[in-house]
Length: 303
Image (cartoon, rainbow, N blue to C red; front, side):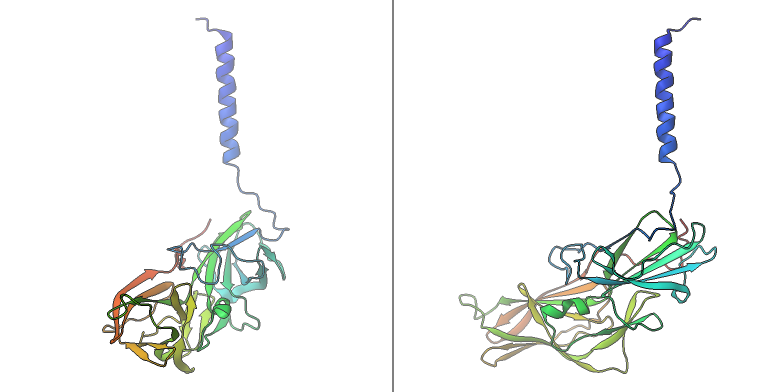
């Protein structure tokens, strides 16, 4: 049986094109280990637009320094313990500002650990964390601990999303009984009274921050962030009374009726109604701070 030549040629050409595209799409990732690791670092997206602390949107600024460790184990398939770290370097904004990191080979397992802000003199992969008793907007960056990790074989490029390791309290004051038709009094101070730890440690192997049990504890003075009074706390703290002091020296104390213990990557949003006769809880929302999901260190992440 005779078939027209032109349709056959067109069909053959289409098949060759389809095969070429398929082969190209399935090409293995070729990694040049003589070049520094092509790395992208970004804070995880905030759950709501007004909950990001110290970081503008989901990008780091050029002056933001991030600490990096690279670990490698021959033939490993799970996350590598950080004790086998090869090198530490700093990442400033969008490029290495210190020693660059390189894949050791393309066959074995690597783990990259990233934390913010960078700290000098880290020993035992334990990063010290400190909190001032009077917090301000200008020292947010030193308290806003972020962490992320990559685990797998060498890749042409790696993106590490970093999430919050700390807890944040936001307190919004609303007019209550006696203030419905007038302005609230000028607020001089909003304090988290009680015993809050002012020092702790970030464990780079796990991404967890724990309080220094033997360290100093103190009340924490919040700072005004937009329309809310904010404080960053260590995980594992029990939230105590909130004391509001007006400019004329009058104090209002909110006493929680339930025990609330802070958790990492969690925000505690209080809405308090200030009445002339006292203060009461309008609402308390406990929300995830950002969209970061901590990696499972026991999972097989061989890529």
